[in-house]
Image (tube, rainbow, N blue to C red; front, side, top):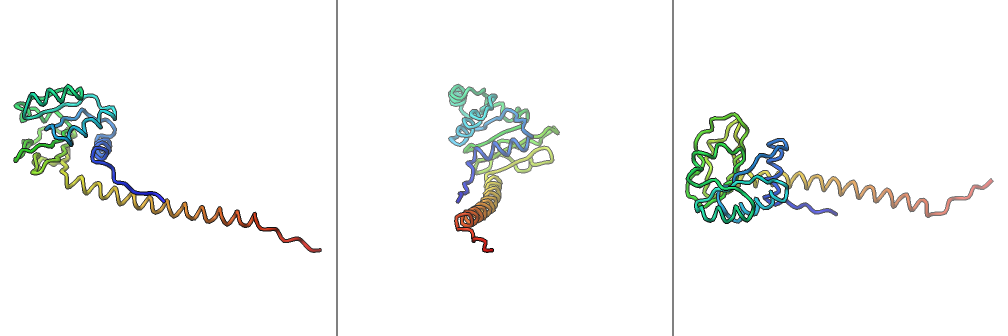
Length: 183
């Protein structure tokens, strides 16, 4: 009766971040101006996230896209020294090596999302206060969510089918003539 559709990546990132940060979403930093990063940034804007930051290898591209989506820029040359100031980073570049790899010196909650292949965020940054997710982790989370949704839909369909059967049976008993009482 109902279909199960896996949420798009931008929805999954938004929901995961809301859960991770307990509904207090910090401003995200997007590293790279890939199509996927721009799609996610635009979606976040639609969800009310206003303070978005962009860092890209080409400053002209950063400024152009930042102007388009009302974001601010972090100069590329400052990324290595400044990224730790951002609690939520989404990275999607074509860089062949890690861009974020210095150990965090803070206990504040940090969420690092690596959509790049090859990876741009060192998985060694994962700690009790810093969650690092790559595209494989996100696919695994989406698969788990899809399985849960399918289970809920199957249960809902079963309850709905049973309710329809009960209603039809009740309707039929009301429709048939009642036996007359013979004295």
